[in-house]
Length: 76
Image (cartoon, rainbow, N blue to C red; front, side):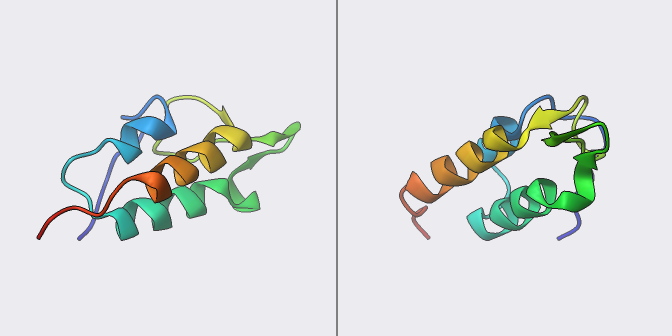
């Protein structure tokens, strides 16, 4: 599945709450966003992936990952 948000999200929690993405996909996207590749050069504790409207603290990304891990699995 290809996902294109490009500036459509304002916070990582919006990705966690996205109803059509599998948890594994959400986890991979959040981990990618948390990587140093998306660090803001002048403020390394911020991340600015292209899918988000503005930079977010890396701690917000880690909190979103924790919230995702705390959710019970979806019924199949």
